[in-house]
Image (tube, rainbow, N blue to C red; front, side, top):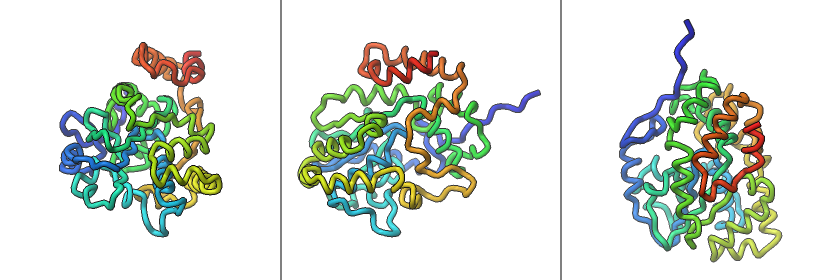
Amino acid sequence: MSAPARRPRYTLHDGFRMPMGFPVAGFDSGQRYEPSPGDVFVSTYPKCGTTWIQYIVYLLLRGGEPLPAGVRMDEVFPHLEEVGAARVRALPEPRLIKTHLPVERTPWLPAARYVYAVRNPFDCAVSFYHHTRGFVRHYDFADGTFDEFFECFIRGEVDFGDYFDHLASWLRKVGEPNLLFLTYEDMLADPRAAVVAIGEFLGAAAARAVAEPELVARVVSASSFDSMRRDQRRWSSERPANMPEFVRKGVAGDWANHFSREQAARLAAKFVERSRGTRAETLWPDVIAAARG
């Protein structure tokens, strides 16, 4: 008789899965946070380039100066639904805020700015699996397999909910003047264009920064995968030594090394079904074609 499939553990609250250790009070108060004009939100489904974009935003608003030694990103750019509204209100303006919430749970203000990024669901699932294994205290899934995690991912039974629900919620905001929509794959293909687009969208000091080619080059270099992987302590709490690093590969297409043909076909079918008639239908046609075989 085979052993039962392992599943990550979560905190269940208000119909939502959260990492264990995220305080319920922070989750609730974060959704009640009242944004101020000038707030900058980096909004993503997990493992879609969140930390990368956070660091680009941080660098652009600080003239390309890197994080000071010993300072972690979440100290200056906290996770809203983890730390709660009071912690965010205490930040100096302009406030920099990370969230993985779907749009209907995200505090919204037309005078605030939102950078939303998405990644193809295949690479997202692989990165999410390694993330979940690595944070043992949040998920208790260190020995879990990709096959076990895949079943949770495709059913939407992971923290921050179903990938397709999340994407659909944010696509409804595309076209709003205070939202910049990016894909992880486009950012990989042309990081300089991504930095310029983010700077022009943020305006003011960030827009002036991207008008200077030397500063743009400095931001691109500092936010590159090779640079960001050098000191992993900047980006996350400590992970066990035998686990993949938080900034792990920074590539597109790694999913082909993890998915079976059956898994790829199942996720491709779900993508086609859930994206039909939406902007998502035009994203990643080559990936979907490869997954469908």
